[in-house]
Amino acid sequence: MTKIRESQEILSALGLPPAQCNELSGLTLLALAQIKEDDSWEYATGRSLTVTKGIMSFVNEHYSKSYAPNTRETFRRQVLHQFVQARIANYNPDIPDLPVNSPRAHYALTPQFLKVVQTYGTLKWENELSIFLDSYVKLSEIYIKERKMNQIPVRLQSGETINLSSGRHNEVQAAIIEKFATRFAPGGLLLYLGDTAKKNLYLDQETLNSLNIPIDQHSKLPDVVIYDKNRNWLFLIEAVTSHGPVSPKRIVEIDDLLKHCSAGKIYVTAFPDMAEFKKHSNNIAWETEVWLMDIPDHLIHFNGDRFLGPRK
Image (cartoon, rainbow, N blue to C red; front, side, top):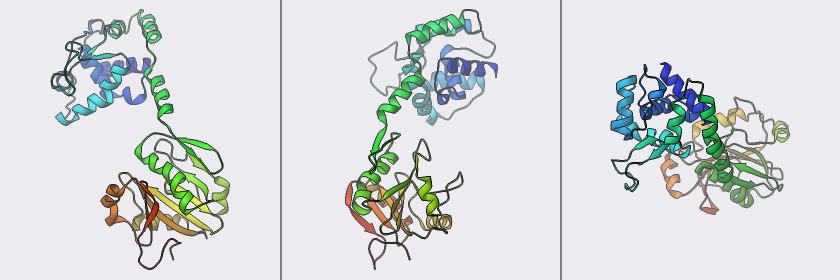
């Protein structure tokens, strides 16, 4: 529909990230502006709307987009929060002292943005947009600054510092390098480190090649790979916060990937704590190791007749 596309173009012009310029965001803007398919943007209003009975009902009635009631939080967390940050919308403008999570919570376009959106498609649009952007920092720029502030610095044994994006999974990866490696692979060389935001954050291509470890877009290395040259041990470590322990299936995959690598292979699943470990204990392969971030000095050995060492 034309109006959905136009609303997405408006959001993109404001500098919002792609995730806030999608169809859901465009529909939310149309609902807040009370713009139907055949309406002109000059008739946009600043009427306050609740999420379910206001925004979602408008979208369903006028754009035939039906969303289940439980997607209310998706509208709120993935669209409306960002609209408020970008000064597109105000939160509870009619009753500012409403308690958090009140069923009467509502949103309305800010007067400043309403003035801008009413000029879309006219000769005044570019000028009004420029004035608005001069007054408020683009949301994408805010997010970039926030990401930098929230990054997790990881200091490598070489002295180099790399930054992981924020998140529980990457907190475990940082702990693997700073706590696990210093205890169980002292002097080990980091060969590979992924990131939830960037798959190949750190890559020692030269050493990987020398060990006959293939790296390309089809490779499925564990989250962290550390090489202990003195013992010729290769630590293959999965960081687990929701899924993906070193299971029998995962070992078959990695063994096939590393079939030409002669280093001894040590498989480790790293968890943030005992509670997360218990969720996955039934799926962890024998002859592998488990390490807990909050108990860094100990390993759990999934084998009764030996301790840390390569699989036979």
